[in-house]
Length: 187
Image (cartoon, rainbow, N blue to C red; front, side, top):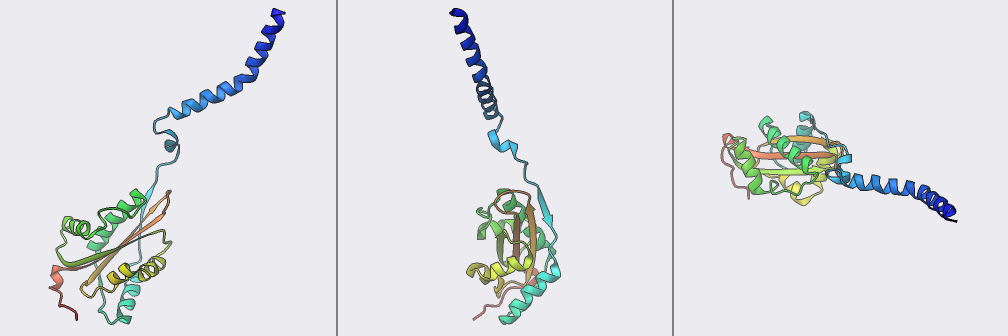
């Protein structure tokens, strides 16, 4: 009878072997650095050209409809916008202290862009410029920036992220450089 007992244990061992191997494999996966997150591809960030002529056409037509002067495109503001677009794309979020009056002021100072007035609009998820622009028009705070009577120039940028919650990150920076003179108070 001892012989039969050994056979039963051997059969039991063969039946449980796949389960034991599976558990050992899963335990090994949990020991990988970073766990499951490292199995995902790291995000790829791509700066995407934005049509300056389309931007200027949209923003200046909108400002004209509201009795405001046209803005001029400023490549320096494109650079400030691009830095911020990359920043929020890397975070996959627009929630950052850099998106504040203080943060914008610091970024403009770093870019050596002395100014009397500045504002910015951020957007995420919009597939193209018209969609981002409509989104800004539909938001009270962003719309206020589009119609700011004190700004004279504008720049824009877009960064795409290959994965994550959002894929398209937009930043529009509006400003009045000191070279354009002090703003005149509006009644």
